[in-house]
Length: 297
Image (cartoon, rainbow, N blue to C red; front, side, top):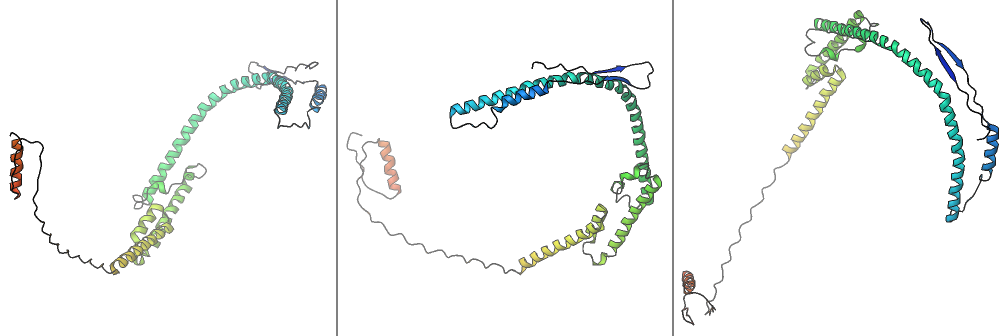
């Protein structure tokens, strides 16, 4: 683009001094100038011929013309976009260099800070572990009979380990939870005589530490028993199926006697031994007669 002024360089210089307490930066603001007014007038003139253009897209020639026009307009835009991106890259170079150098220096601080943080985190982890161990020991002492049935994990609350919560307050909160379990157990035991599935409810109470869940478990067991009893009663009250009478075998029909007839059998070729075997087979079945050889045997 003729007449276009070049982008001015942005200078961000880091002045490094020995024992400098602060980061001193010399910054020269940059002004980017361009022939925007002339460019806008030129673009408006070129685009005016295409604004509101209509094409008969039922014809191949019109489709080709529309594509060419759009390609031309996109080319105009791409020229400006490429120039804009180039100026932006150059404008950002000193800023990128400035940020890179700052991060290199602050990473030195991060290294030292991270080392301290690791020590602090380790100390905090050990403190929390010690606080939890103290609470577990207090639980075993305060509720020595409950502890084997309900592990400490089911009662624990992480907020008890916070410094702001405090050990005394944490122990008191733990004791209140244990007392609540004891009260719920007493409430459940008071219903033992009228509860068919007391053991189910008791087991659920110590599993969930929830009296409502325990009562619901007993109720569900009652309902299941009722369903089974109803099924059993229905099966037992149903009459036994009548035995199916056996069908008597029909008397065998006596075979009708066959008539005896005279038969002639012609055997084109056979050996003497074969014919002797045939004669023996016929005699076994009670058939008698004469077998004659017509040739030389």
